[in-house]
Amino acid sequence: MTQGCIIIDADRCKGCGLCTDVCPQAVISMATTFNARGYHPTQLVDPLGRCTGCAVCAVICPDAAITVYRDVTPRVARVPR
Ligand code: SF4
Ligand code: SF4
Image 1 (cartoon, protein in one colour):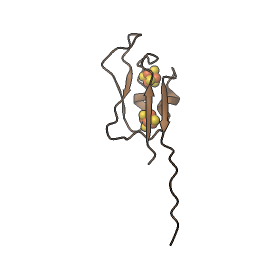
Image 2 (cartoon, rainbow, N blue to C red; image 1 turned 120 degrees about the vertical axis):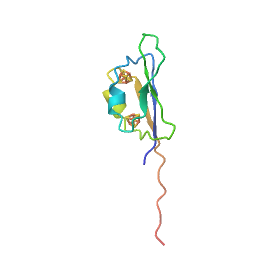
Image 3 (cartoon, rainbow, N blue to C red; image 1 turned 180 degrees about the horizontal axis):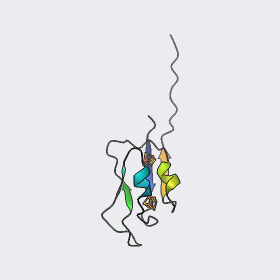
């Protein structure tokens, strides 16, 4: 499965929770801290590396606060013997 990672710009986040609701891997949660605008921003909590880089979170974010990175290392083709 493709591996991904997200970076959340905490000061752009308004804590609406849309990204936490839609993440199919459930790896986004609300931080207990406050950002510069007084909201609880979201954070990636993914110790097992379950983010696939699907980008659903970034698409739904109304404040464009999420950047998605995806491992695009090409697979080595297996040559039949
Ligand atoms: S890219 Fe997909 S799997 Fe990764 S945090 Fe966003 S919604 Fe979840
Ligand atoms: S969808 Fe965007 S603004 Fe809403 S909680 Fe997630 S990162 Fe923050």
